[in-house]
Image (tube, rainbow, N blue to C red; front, side, top):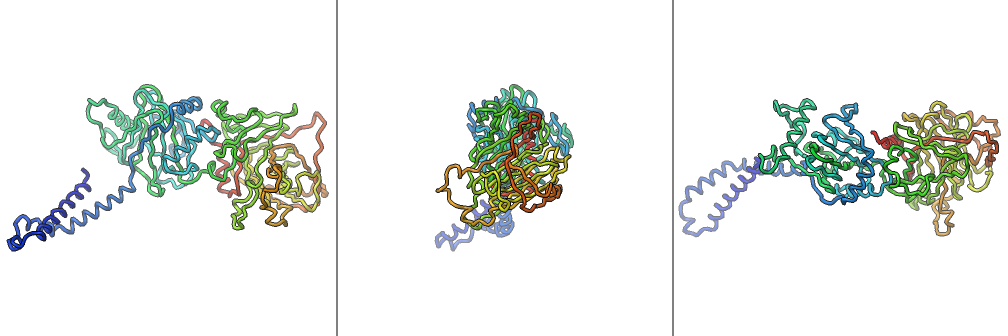
Length: 615
């Protein structure tokens, strides 16, 4: 029995004796009251009076210990039948071919296949797999957190003698809400014949000592030997000696079983140093688990305002795993939304390959190593989205400006002149275009109407920005924010530097609020949809009356708005077979509701790297 419990029992017993003594005196007969107090009772009362202050302190200390226990690590919770056997088999068959040696971070270095962690694993970014979404939703519910905090889960498998020695899933020094793992859900999808238990020591890792000198662990070898000793002691048969440490908690692998625990208490301020655990060696068969971590804040790729994710070749390294399992299109020319919205706002992007010169080539290397891309020749994508969901403001005049409009983000490399990177078209919106023009310049234009081939000079807006050729040839991250009042574009290098930015005001800026947020009841179905085109041949061209002076005035770090002295006409189709058709490399497209600040955009620029199956 623990010392605090002993004090508690002693204090309770003492006060009980006191109550009995005084109670018997109060309830006695007159004859008893007239008698002399018994010697035993007198000694007990004297002792209690003498130690009354000490007993009060013990009771107070015990109450403080109870409060402390509320902030201490609780034993992991085991749940049976979290997954069915069929679901476990499907996940294993789909993603086991992608396994590679697990990596472990040692300071700023990454090492693989160490004796401390010798498993194989793969981290799964959003791939559009509905079964994966279902598992993530269940994991969030089991841990008691919203699903937008669930990290991409990791599949890990252990073969003969492979293990992961004592560790914790987070560190006390971690203050980043996007990387702080407040809880863990571990799911077994394949059980070994022997070995492979998950062992919890229920005490801080810092309190562990080596087997030889009983001193704090100093080397990786000492830590591995201690952990293996723990595992062997818990694998003995019932008729063998008693286990090494009765305070350890051991969970045996079983298909469909899940175990969950807190790494931080739910106010996310108290780190659970006692969450030390490890994966014991597998001695026969194979063990596979899903490691599902819960972050303390909503993650960028799971926020409620994320409308769509289209990898556009970024998932190249996962192609063998997701083939025929997550593709929703009947042709290879369409690329589906793989976000948690599952096509609610943008079901897919489809390319026009109607001509013999139109091709799409998958590239193994995109903005990051092993993160793929698409090379487009004389073709682009188009889709339609609900106009009032994407652009129209709410009727509440207090609506935050950050929630109005939408932000489109994508990676691009080597765009050629005559290419329109982005085009929005709608009767109320007009036509917004971001075009690649001569001299490594981008032209941001907003025409007042979407249907006419020419636009009146007084109903258009134009801005120019120039990009350094060397930067533009490499991969760049383009962010385009569009609302009913303005459109802005910002281009970042792969390293995060701003290469250029521009802003164009709406030619409809003088329209009333009622016109912007009118009801859809009287609109035709076509008016309720806005057309989005990406990476297409330029439909409109700018004819400058100043012999190109406007284009020359742009800089690599700022934008220059031009006077509206230009006309827009449709570009005539080329009949020359020798003409160089527009081409571009693209990867990883995102669509968000509202405006994203620079910190969010910086995080999202790095999200494409999650598609590196070897990381």
